[in-house]
Amino acid sequence: MSMAIVDISFDINNSDKTVIKTNIKEKEGIEEALSDFIRTQIGARKDESEPNKYDTYSIKIGLDLSDDSFRIESNTGNKGLTLGIIMATLKQLDNIALQPL
Image 1 (cartoon, one colour):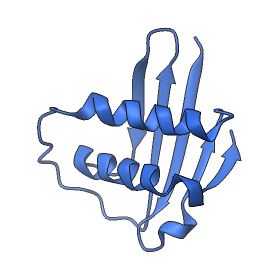
Image 2 (cartoon, rainbow, N blue to C red):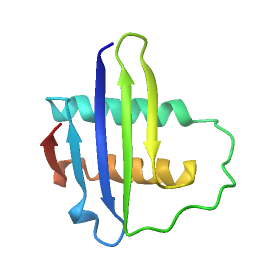
Image 3 (cartoon, rainbow, N blue to C red):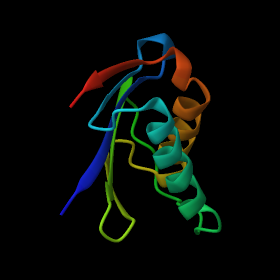
Image 4 (cartoon, rainbow, N blue to C red):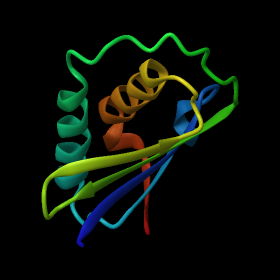
């Protein structure tokens, strides 16, 4: 199984400290993976779960390239917060430090 991974460490107090670790080589590929994940969430039911309160949130998105399915792990406690962080990360992608995974 071939898996593209985007591992986000998002500092809620200072988004300039956000770091992405990934095995995707091109920034355009990261942008495409995050955008595709966001599209899969359109129309999803609202998550009423209480979000966790952290200074730094971790979100790991895996894209299984064999069937274009996503796996996600996060410490947010709430899907809406997770999606909001992914959207904010996508918006500031050009200013985020990228590290190889």
